[in-house]
Image (cartoon, rainbow, N blue to C red; front, side, top):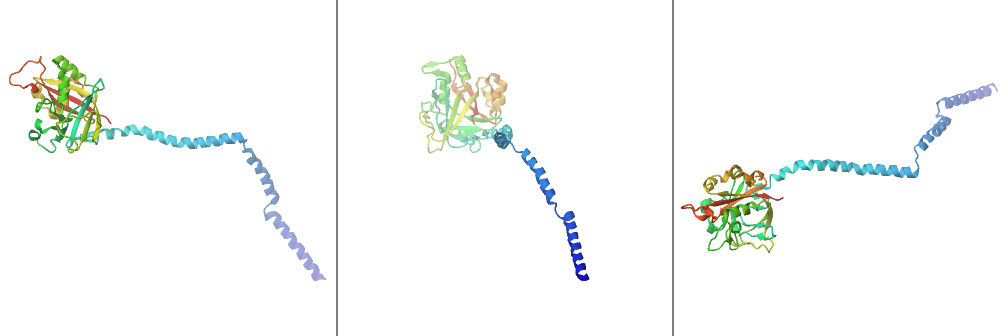
Length: 310
């Protein structure tokens, strides 16, 4: 009996110890419940009406949409600083805008006049001092133009008549400056016509030697049969005797020569990186004094500054 009582007491002690451990060390269920209750209002406090939620969601979406625009704006701001690089490539020695090659192929120059008419050029074969000798190749009967490099790219072209016809590369330009049908202009009218070329647009048409015949007029009513490049006349001057001989010594410094000797001709506006010069002969005007031993085509030299249009 005594042994049973002792066992009973031991069980009671064990149960009491278990209760104490449970109270002090087990997770407090009441406290967890209280925490759940006290944290629940904080969740309710951030709950918002449906309209406000939609507005907030739209604001969030708007912020997400606007973020890429900032990046685009930064990209667009950086673009102007990069435009100078391709600009330097518009005239790269004998190549214009990576399209026209002044060293080979057939080429014609056409100028748009105020009355919407086109002053057509004649086909010529492009050559340059890169490949051939000027004295042997640049002959009127060969139907060629000849390009040299200097402080700007310079294209030499023949004008006047050959075989009794105005079929050289710049023949029609010469005639345009000196006459209108049967009317022959004097020097002052010729100078006015020359200055009037500034601001005119023009274009080169270039094709292969088997697609066009040299010493033949370009047909402005037909599309260009090859590559077309738009141009703008930004400078023009007429070099007269007695400066013609000195002019001939400055083909590689022609822009500087024109700025010094014809400041009214606008050659300071010609950028060698984006433009080039065409030179050709202009016949003697009837009121220019006759000089002994000088043929008519040696009296004047036309110098036109073209800007390549991107």
